[in-house]
Image 1: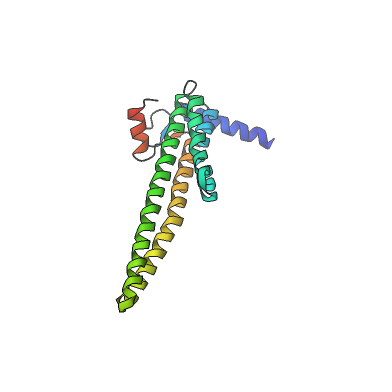
Image 2: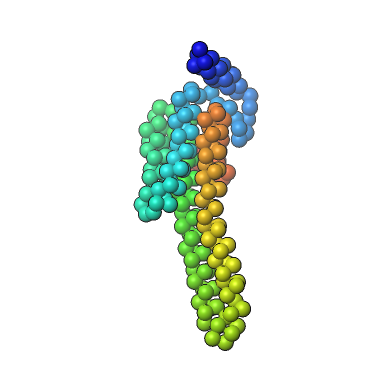
Length: 184
């Protein structure tokens, strides 16, 4: 009995969303079947693969974007809604991975410079005064390297949830750019 009620409730919600085409902007409700919402949400949720396999190391970081890109190629003829969200997810993940790699490299250079200068100047005792600065900078950058991907993941999963709820969500800058340039 409960299953039938849940199915009826879901159907009523879908009918409500399908009828609501007046809403505009970032949270615009779309007229798309529920299976398309699920597929689009899964394209956004593939960010979880990117983070988990990226932490594991190496080439695994490319699997999440590859899933989103495969979904784009699989759905581009069948569903403009799913194709757009898959391509948007792909762009978000690739941009995030590249920005993180650049940030990690720049951080490593700054940490190396701080410790090298501190070590060299410790011979004249001035470097000992710089060691707390180098330590503080190291800790701050390591914390950023740990928490920035979690924020990135959280935003991607939030978008996944919004799309699953039937809202036409766009990533800041990326969604508008893809819509304008690619015309999915």
